[in-house]
Length: 238
Image (cartoon, rainbow, N blue to C red; front, top):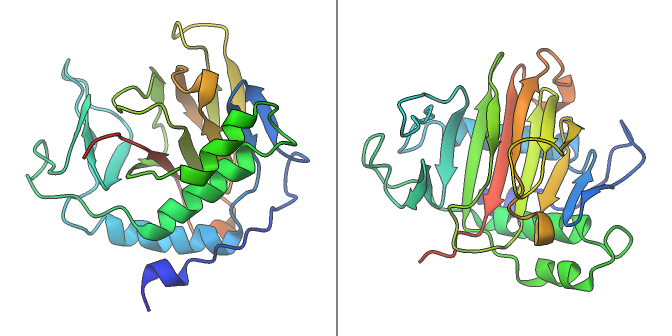
């Protein structure tokens, strides 16, 4: 039986923190505890397989020569600052793993959950879930001391929402505005199992991770330390 068939799609939200979904900004929604512990452990197992795939986990080097503290493995399309390709020309030249079907289905569920009428008033956002078809994922691992500066996700040729899933250690997620890396911004605590979706008016908002809190990963997540963050995107490429 394939991994696609094994992924448990039924979601039962945990009541471990915060009462329910939060609208952080227009089009930006946090859904606490969206992934069940079973799903988190299942994804952690897949992450172990991805890091042993054709393109290893690596810390990308920015054009100025600075190496990122976050390490990444990609699915569907390989991201290097600041473009996508099928082959990891900056690592070993090999083609990255295919984007899994189960992740497409999970991405649609994620957008539907975040953009339900009870959370957002804009009906056009709710309609996005029907045809949401992510084709790339950046799977980032944050070890102790890792951080990510304020940036925009703008290398895609699509304005479809970005779906972000957190597993492991808690982090401070800084969600800003579309004009500048500085204030105004909102600091959001993302814990293991949390979902964050940003699209619509917030699709190109600056965001970053100023801090990860060590040793906060729950035992139920299947991750002993660090933080895994999966961000699904629609590249608009073919």
